[in-house]
Image 1 (cartoon, helix red, strand yellow):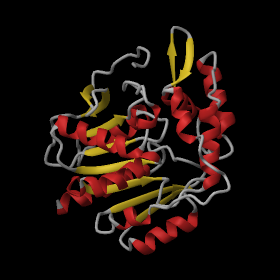
Image 2 (cartoon, helix red, strand yellow):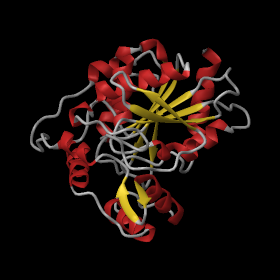
Image 3 (cartoon, helix red, strand yellow):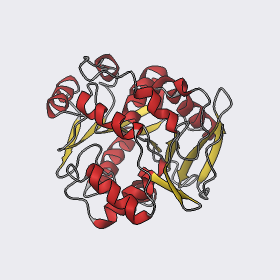
Image 4 (cartoon, one colour):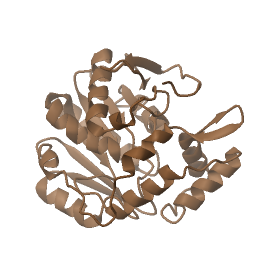
Length: 300
């Protein structure tokens, strides 16, 4: 089952999953500067490649260390085909889809940037294809997830907003996120709305399969959530940068501290005035990521 028609970017590529879905990725700087490691961007649960557009432009056109940047739309998100079976919206299947995309593009390894769900997929990939991962940036995610944040995500997936204009879409995001993102500018809010919604013949809708909400229904707010410490330990010898929004309700400050104890060489960056997840194009984050990637290039 396909998602509704959207405009295709000149940097878009499409590839097939192992079960035949047509999946989408966006490639910046596809052929030049192959001596520098590519960056592979994996978005959050209901997000898409547009979250990375500004960061990708910065990294791909960097004056000193330009590199190829690839961002993936998981099945059921963005320009990727929807799955008829919503139970295939899981991190194992999505990790397999990423491997299929990397294989189709001839990418053997790179630096992975995982926002939220994307970080969990990166940990799966560390077990599935360890040689592919030369460095990792976790954006507001770790081996322990705060249950209150998950409940909030479940709530907005279950009751998606239906704005009637871009202005209303922006105001909707301010209502949903304003308390956690106190430093966002008008441009940040506009970008947030553009990443989250699509306008199809005057109808505004969230840019993912509504069936994605079914994957969250079994969550129990009072139950202890499983952790991913063994998977995180698997990255202990991989260069790692962990970014946390100071107002995050997904990655707790104590978890970030525990991560640094398990991975003593881990670099960390906490972002004032932002929650889950920080906008990777904002403040000094792009510069920090570029510096992190350049250090990995030296030892590659």
